[in-house]
Figure (cartoon, rainbow, N blue to C red):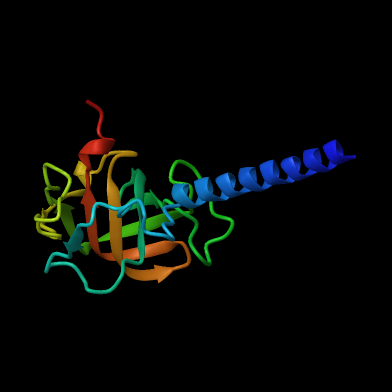
Length: 172
């Protein structure tokens, strides 16, 4: 009888330890750091927006997936509220049509990241820099796009468009 009781207690303890390890792993994977024991999960750098860009959040942002004349398609990297039923592909979120007009301001993000991970003595703010760009410089599945303008469903009439071609997405 004593052996059965001990086995039952050990089994419960093993299940509790497994559940705790599972939850801890999920929290760390989702970058939740409730105790602050592991230091910051991000690189600690704040990017200050370029003066040329609107101060409001963009209407749409995501990965450039295609272009047809003056309409480009971008795909959000996560689901967006109110955009259900959208086709989903590489970014994991809905696709947006972005209409580029002759009045659209197009910028290429030229911000250079620091060469090394920041330490406590490094500056924690980085000024974003942009220069005039063109739609021809967009690369499928490699350009990240942010758009400000008038949104109508899953279509945005672009007033300002900014794209970047991060080095970590480009092929060697």
